[in-house]
Length: 562
Image (tube, rainbow, N blue to C red; front, top):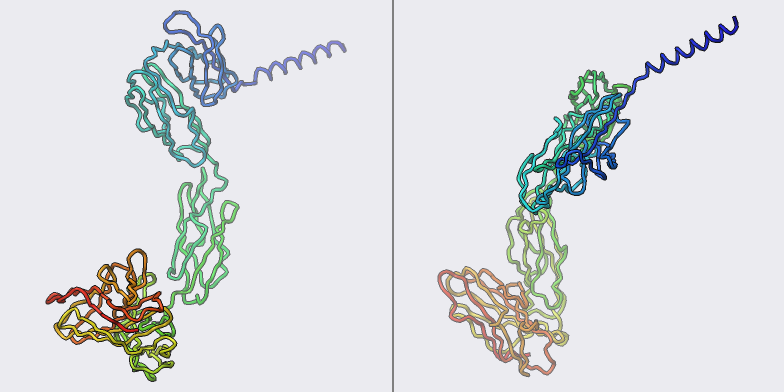
């Protein structure tokens, strides 16, 4: 009886084992086939390379032309076969679980006239890329027609077909629609040319969503102007709706509407955030929370107080003017901020020696970087007839905003220390009978000699006058020394109405109406101590008046004493 029970137990265990074995299901399949010569019946091709896409697995055919890929997941695969002397061929094979799929392929001998090559062996789109390109090249000796087949619904190609001359190439753009994919996906497109076909594997990575809830922004910046902004709550999940609420509002100046809601899959909900600017007197920041799907997302909020219009104001540069011992003109600049300003100049103290290019006008509103919005005024110092010493006064720039005060100083040197405006002998020949000219003074400081003369318009109005320091302007001293700007030598400088342009071909242009007097200076540098006079000084001049021109194009000064 004991043996009976032992045999019976063994029988039951064996039956259970066989039953379990029969219940197991093979979830993989395989592909096997033979590669043969299409031109020679029954001829197997040994050494052919068989590539399985999208896995990238490779196999080499044996002497009987056979190959096999085992343990493959269910799905569609592309088998590409290449062999020396044959046209590459591609076919699609479906793998079914538990079965062996046939993959027999015939290769045609290559005629050697045309051959298609791809610039890449695969296209990997990664996690973000939507479009990539590759290049087709005809490396053969004749024109070949080509087309692309095997496109999945989420893959588009441009162009899809064409014709390539020998040695030419074609760029092809491949675009994937990521919205149609919910997981990382691989496929292959088939590039066909005449009797040849090549598989190009494509892989697109899809990053699975870690959260159903998303915000279209993480920061709301109200700046100095905005009182109302909005953001979106998005449901990026794969199924169902998301219930959400807003919390964390701890400041009295911020409100949110709505504070809760439900957003369906693939949809978004708009939330309005409002700031009460009456309560904003300084920069403020806060954070609100959007809660849903078991998590909280932060939204930062920043707001600045509204801009206050700055008052109009004016500035002057430089803040003081010093003519020193030899300067006769100085520029100062007026700036008006946040609006234009009318001005008028006054002087305080002994200012009989001081004059200006304009004493009243309008300062335009200053725009940074635009020099035309700066008002420039030239101040002139006249040392004629003044005793040696230091002179000072104050210029007052008067506007509706009040007064700006500019201290001004000037020094008249002693005649021994620099020739402080001593009288000068010599002659001056005017450029026109209607323009009178007068020698005023001579100043000497070391090896620098400066002569001053005036020109007065006694005739009709002249639109403008140009004085040139060019080839028409030169001088000779008593030792035969030559002065000009030519050859890089700048030992002669002409100041015309307070403006100097040493060694520059462009003219100095000044208005010269009837009755007006312009003061001019000629400065010579590096004058030898043996020089006793300037025998000839010539200055080029012309007018741009529409009514008349000068009789001559130069002013000539002779025998100017030192």
